[in-house]
Image 1 (cartoon, rainbow, N blue to C red):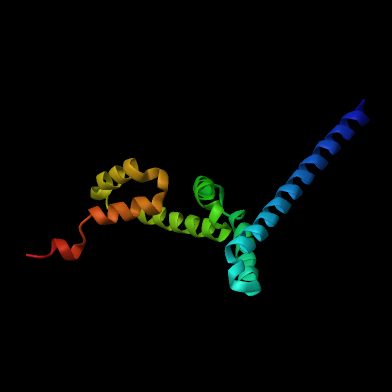
Image 2 (cartoon, one colour):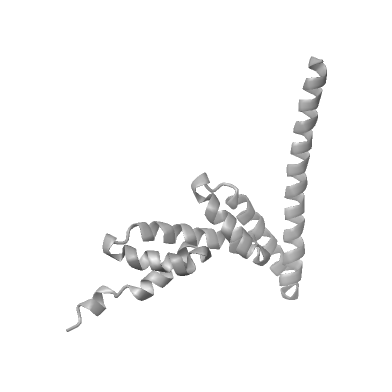
Length: 144
């Protein structure tokens, strides 16, 4: 009985490992195909650079902390068809915007909340751009 249980656990683990390897292989194949499709007109070097950039970005995306998971998921959903380098750029911009928005003065909170309600599903970078358009700059407020 104990041997059967151990065998079942080992078999389940082997299936999980194989699924992860298969998923990564599928992602790598997707990168190659997308780069050939998107960059083929620029020659072998363009395709090679695209593949390298996407492979590097895919590896980097798996290293983001758990606090960034929501942003990584949203950027992946919205940008994956444009490549993993674009997904990583989206994540980096959103993380920087999220940190910047946290530093805004409390009196700007209403503007930020309005922007979040309007376009929050598009991510912190879009919310920050919206808020920056609506918040007057120091130069504008100092004019007579």
